[in-house]
Amino acid sequence: MPQQIELFKIDNPCIGVCQSNKKGYCFGCLRNRTERQLWLQMTDEQRKEVLQLIIKRKKRIEQLRNRQQEQMSLDFDTPTETPKLF
Image 1 (cartoon, one colour):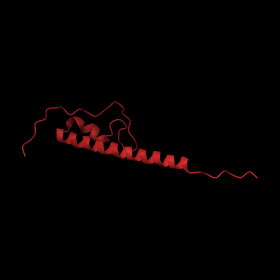
Image 2: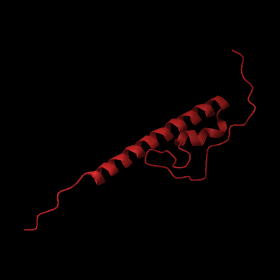
Image 3: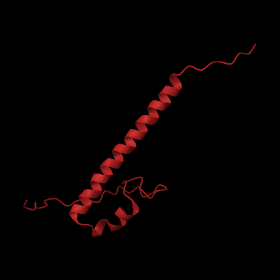
């Protein structure tokens, strides 16, 4: 297969929110420490792989948030017994 010529530069996904969680993933760009540190040395192919990982991480985060919202909704919808005072 012939190699495709890159017409566009792959931009750094950093959005300037440079804080990491306990596992080392940035809250802003969702890259891990190594991906952030080596970005400038990466080939375009490696950068594309990192961007694909970021997309998967975003989907996972959305799924977790949706589950949490559903659980909160269930918690509020479930009737609770009121304590009997007398």
